[in-house]
Length: 248
Image (cartoon, rainbow, N blue to C red):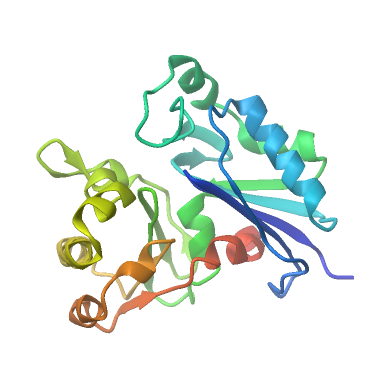
């Protein structure tokens, strides 16, 4: 009997989930709900339990979270420490709850199944990397997600989104969804192309994958100019990677 994996992709605006067999085939219609705010750690666990109960039975769970996750522990995370979601006021109480939260242990206990919790871009990448050379994964959504794989193995995570790209502006702000709405897709797409050209000499990747909900907003002209080592991947990879994440 196939091992079933509950895969949950946690974003700033939406939570997406499905149940997959070992081949990555979905065994139910994926669900998508708005991320509830304010989101305490207890509310998060309750929401994960609700999602589990809405889908077929699974043997294990993979969760992708925004931010810096080490060994299943939240070192730092955006969005969920804000009172009403992305770009709203940071709540000191929520920040204290989330930073240092062993979410992997808490999920294992609450859902009564083995859990693996990684950065959301890492789970996204697990579903698409080929294992050949240095592969970079960038996700474009509420902010910017980033993961590095070498020979199919996950490299230590660092938050490119927190790096300063222009004076007093981080990549998360510069390339995030708020800027896309402000600029429009045409100008925002050019900005994505500029970001790729600036990162290229830093990483010298063999392949760069761009996914996330806003990847479809990149204009064809900019994609062509970026080069043939750039691949746009479907946002569904965010949950599809939940199976292969256990092999990293």
